[in-house]
Image (cartoon, rainbow, N blue to C red; front, side, top):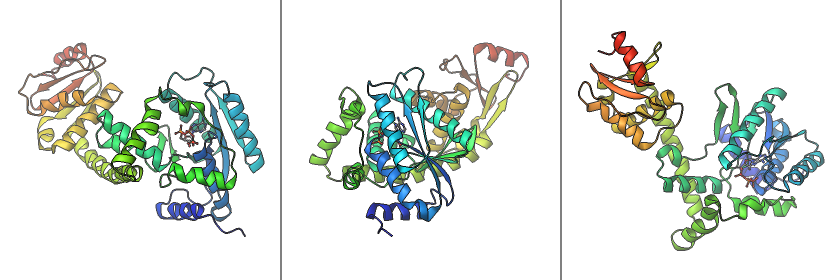
Length: 345
Ligand SMILES: Nc1ncnc2c1ncn2[C@@H]1O[C@H](COP(=O)(O)OP(=O)(O)OP(=O)(O)O)[C@@H](O)[C@H]1O
């Protein structure tokens, strides 16, 4: 038997200690054709006899670049060479942004995984991606949740709770995956859009991070990825704490729909949890991630007198203080209905 490559041995240890990909799992590998996902596919294939996984490849063709069909054909060719099942999903209309493309990819891959009985989708995200995301989110003013950036695992959607997204390469840098591909002679497909400095993300990767490395910390990438790792555990802890406070503080009502939050519970909550409670409530009520200012606006009602009210949130929802409760109602109209039913007195 061929001795394991050091990266393969490291990945094996990671998978064991973190219990990321259980034995006999059915795994769909998301392969863009870039160096990270090629490295991932190759490493998983090498470990497959030991873990007994069922592996397959999936590729998403966004139709963005003139060479996107050739890119897809390249991935199909590799999968055939590796003797793995392969699916290519093509976007009917090219997604309008990076974020839209990501959403489309995960939705399509998720449907495919369900259809063919795969329990896990894996991506080639690395410590370098993690470092960049953390730095990017820091500059944008994100809280801890943004700084944790990419997590090792996450469930893909509430409609498919058994389906997990796993990122097994978060401990490897892009430099390591690049060297690995070169050593193994893996044919990397170069995505020309990665060079485009019109994208903020690329400028951060090609200009800001090299500057930080040169002038502040040659290990900046590892340091940022480490920050993300530390923050991930802290966010998990705070989330679990928030669960209990949310349960005690918030009562949902129907007809008309409204959320009632106890003012005294909100007052007792430490500021970090108070903000989390308000954020979670706004997320549920508005169906979108609230901004910091919106969270602060709701949180300020913890100490506001009876009768206080916020100006409308996006979509027209308002929050009103009544008799020790903060009522979050979808609109002024709903507030009037509540007055009629005497709940809001
Ligand atoms: N078009 C795609 N088809 C399949 N998987 C994709 C696609 N684009 C991205 N992915 C998955 O998401 C991961 C991260 O995507 P990202 O856009 O950061 O990487 P990339 O630069 O396109 O390619 P790579 O990470 O493979 O070098 C990839 O490693 C890959 O697993």
